[in-house]
Image (cartoon, rainbow, N blue to C red):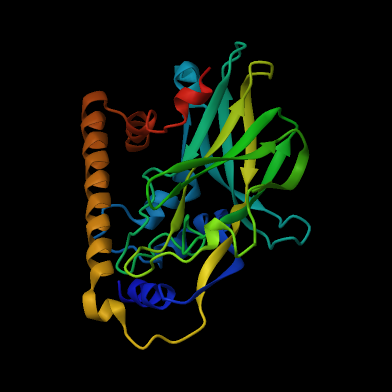
Length: 317
């Protein structure tokens, strides 16, 4: 908590400057290293540990309702895959392997790939449980671009990255199709982005005690149109990165706002409490479902979360 408050107190100042930076939202080499995840911020008091939620083998592949046949669900899952390093672009390590089994019939379908539980934006003792390439980035201003290294196998499948901000607003980012072979860095460029400091978006706004804008990974999404072949689809994802503005400090403030008022600590504690309630409810539902059906924990969690994504209605046509 202290680390987060120090960051916030230095960021939220009366005189601010916007600067463009690059941040790694998710790196599946990090989430594929179970030993590294176990040395993170998770502890015995966590409702859901980082390693349990993020390890590449534990991610869920959730099909839309019309595609959710027994056979399709059985053959839709993720796995932890070794990469040779993409000819030196990155070092050898782990990537996320995705397998989805789409209907053979000619209708639209898609697969949502997400952690077992929604990421905690303000989780952990200092609010940084999932930062550092584990799905959350704090202090995100206007986003200029989103990029992702993904492995194509010549499928006519459209790839999306779904982001969720501090106000729980979900934005679907179209990354392009996977009709290519091998590794390729797909990119979405924000046509509305501007670096003009005189535009409305960059005018001065009240800072302290506003929370720093943040973004987390909601899910990855793979859409198959009715004109494409069904059955097995496989791909691999290395990472998702953001190019965005941040607010930086160019002067040292005379007064420490947070030490005086502790408004942000109170707000951060409130939001963590809300997230804990949500996670407890998901755990209880999973346990009840497991007892009722005799399913394994992973299968029960999949049934509990399969309808949770808000994009289902829009693409299930």
